[in-house]
Image (tube, rainbow, N blue to C red):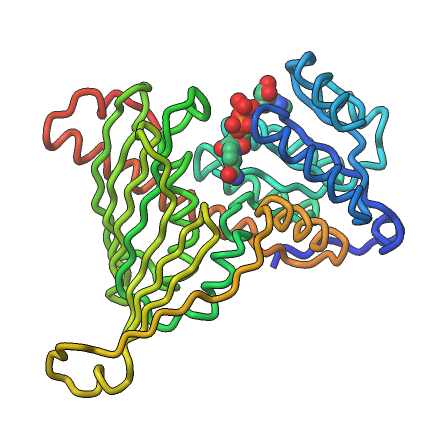
Length: 353
Ligand SMILES: NC(=O)c1ccc[n+]([C@@H]2O[C@H](COP(=O)([O-])OP(=O)(O)OC[C@H]3O[C@@H](n4cnc5c(N)ncnc54)[C@H](O)[C@@H]3O)[C@@H](O)[C@H]2O)c1
């Protein structure tokens, strides 16, 4: 449990009627969204106040600050000389900078939401875990799909998933190319399946190729869990279509989750058909569409983070989960490289994760 300290000063700042002063560090494509949502939450009456954005690209920081009515800074240190009251911050710098940025924030007593993937290596992730413990900080990892209403509606349906089929395909954009597609996109699904399968991974098989960038742009992975459950994942950032779907089978049931449409479909074979044992020509199949209340996942994620900050409670996606997804993603990257070596794919051996 990443519970943080409850010193008197901290509890004063975090009283329910006191808005939490927040900042966003790194305001490129995704950090700008964090700034937008913090401002929207404030306008909707949440006790939060966006006081600053930080980016070494000052033009970008200025533009985002103007758009969302706060101050722009070139570094965390600069911001803290003006805004020592900042209590929480989103870290949306490129992954290779997550550790240095989060370290500066935690050392200043600030709780952090660190975008996914948590870090570029397990050593960095471990350092983040140590920093959070030393400084008694609330740390959440930005595994956004956990807050997708379709995923939330699926959790009560899980009984004994034995087979997952997951597709996350997107068109090419020149962003997040500092990491393989496994750490950029597939990690969302790895986190969800790890949470749903609830069993240690026994075997990883993987193949991947660099297509347009110097890193792996498309990958296919097969995981086998201790429970016997199997999961197949395909992730691509070089496709002509956008697909974000997770499907799984469990006894008498097939569940299909569309992350993009925020829809869940459940196909259940009737008790009569399943009890008979013999093949049934016309089995009773019930189709259900559980109600899903649409919400922007980032709204739900940041609200949940602010709640954990205020209550000093363990966030929905704690550091340990971010580290677990990163460890698996790095194992997959290693398996892709191993496979590439075995079959003589020169590009794969060169491409670093
Ligand atoms: N949760 C999600 O669904 C999701 C989606 C997209 C991106 N992300 C994650 O968000 C992070 C940022 O991705 P992006 O697509 O916005 O990248 P981006 O390149 O568009 O933006 C990164 C910004 O960080 C700034 N920056 C660089 N070094 C910095 C530093 N030391 N301190 C502060 N700012 C710094 C850059 O100038 C840039 O403006 C990545 O970790 C990425 O994986 C998460």
